[in-house]
Length: 96
Figure (cartoon, one colour):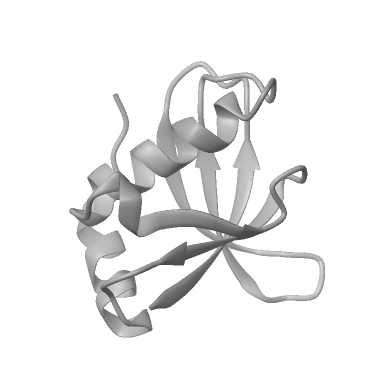
């Protein structure tokens, strides 16, 4: 199981993983944009679909560990360790 810190921007023009940035405390977080609005979990669902596709794992392996109501989230990815997750993200920056 891997943990992935994410900073989500809902309501964007396109679904896209922008790459790594630092949060206010200087910790690395993955910046992700999704078209879906933060209404009834739509943005979280879009985030899960985009990450699952980019990581090559089923949607059921990706969940919001905490921060479901926040732009800053901790995503849990089952079936990958932290190193596998980071390696897949290097090649997985994509949008649709």
